[in-house]
Amino acid sequence: MIGTYGKAVPAAAVATRKRTYKFQNGLFGVNAEVTRKGFFGGLSAQMLNNRKFLSGDPTGPYGWESDNAQYRRDKNDSPCGSNYVRLTNGQIRQTSDVIVLGSGRRYEAKILVRPSGECAVTFGVPGFEKTFVINEDGEDHKELSFAFTGCETKNGAFFVSVSGEADVFAVSLMPADNFYGMRRDVIEAIKRIAPASIRFPGGCCADHFDWKECLKPADLRTPFDGSVKDFMLRDTYHQDCADISLNEFIMLCREVGAEPEFTVSIILSDGEDARRLVEYCNGGTDTEYGAKRAAAGFEEPFHVKNFYVGNEVYYFGYEYQNDGVKAANRTNGIVNAMRAADDGITVCLGVVADTGLRGWSRDFVNTLDCKYDSVSYHRYCGSKPGSEAEQKAAEDGIPGSFYGGVDEGLAYVHDELFAGAGMPVNVDEWNFSWGCDANNAMFLSNALEFHFFARSYEKYGVTDARFFMPVNEGMITVNGAGCRIECAGEAFRLLHGHADGAVVECAADDPDLDVLCTDHGDHLFMSVVNRGGGEWQIAVDGYAAGPCAQIVLDKYSFTNNGFEIKHYDRPVVTGHGMTFLCLTAVSE
Image (cartoon, rainbow, N blue to C red; front, side, top):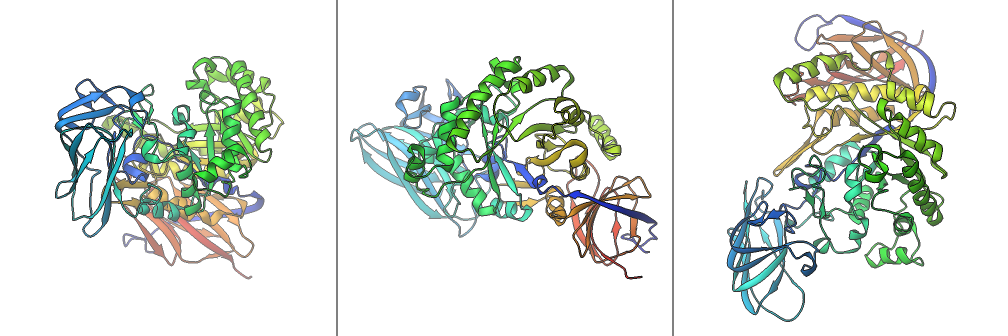
């Protein structure tokens, strides 16, 4: 056969054997954590950073240039529960690559302000601003807003100028067609990759996220401070304005057709707080918190079925971090209270397999006295490489990943910690690494890891997985001007062909080819990952292949994310690429 580059391509035979277990559709989940650029600069339509002025030093709020501005650290004096800026014949200004306007598109600018006497307030994007003359009237704040039609603007600016004196509490700049404060182009990209479920507010952020802020309008929610974990909110001055909270998350899940899942912190939530959360999500309007949900504009229950209780408590659990017994007792109270509000929910609890922390897991599991349905396990293949030498070492190591289908941590959880119990395992965080931009080396790691999970149901009890995380860390890359689905996102989309099938044992005669096959009655669906650099033609005895879709990389590296999706009449797979085949039986 003549291949992609006009040369002969060697053939690799794939042998299919017996049908085994049903493919676990729960593998198609994702983890949306309020970290880094997953939300601000990603999913969120908000263009202004530190927009409620929580973060700053005595000279002023971070991210803002100030003139005749006094930075006030009296959070009790702000309707947002945050710091604020007092302008006396002064101005604040923010310039950012997130402030990108499109020609002919409508935008809304807004501020929350409190005048002292009479003053004139001007705000907006230069060339698109408006002046309001306002007077002090005893109210704690005024909301000023206006809409405008933009022109092409990159690396734009937003300013607030006051003639007189006024306190500025919050500012906002968003496209007028935003969806509950989220970008519609990013939502369309999420729809395309089609996650079956979305976990929120993800992992480490859960211990700083107060769900009750969703009871307030977005502009009045208190920002949360995540500075204690310097890796978590590093792109937003270690704070988040809670623009996308529980209500918005539910609307996102409904819009993209994903099952909502919520993470409950054992640090912030006691049993009563967690019971109220479940009641807010699932209770009728005749319940206290179901009525609060309805008052917020959401009469129908959210029907959140899946809850995670605790996240990496063994790493970041404060008083529970070094005491599995104490963590379990806290967890018992929370879970039992949640079930009192809705006994139909499912609960996932976190365990760890690190050698030095296995005692914590044993103490935790042995002390649990609540009903739970699965355990959470986090798996990353490496860490973000920095130097060229680190990148080269990671690139060289990825092709050898998952040979033999063995994972020591999963083996500990399945074979020792829950020996004989058949406990379902949810790998609710997985990727090559957290905190990385999309690239082609990560794609290869992701493809091999997904195949491994799909083959791990009987061996390790893996029923679910949640990719960490789709926006700006693997599947979808977003900037001010637009977004695109990366090769890992396209692979995730194409892998949906395995859904509802039965996993078929199979093997290729060349070890570079990693194969996953599912039986769908009238056809087989096969995905093939090429660990090596050569190109192969795929032959499956007894089956004919229809047209194949193939992900072809520009270059296999941590510094390249170029790729193409190509379609061929014959099944081929290029170096470090991936191909997807529909196979039908050949009559003898």
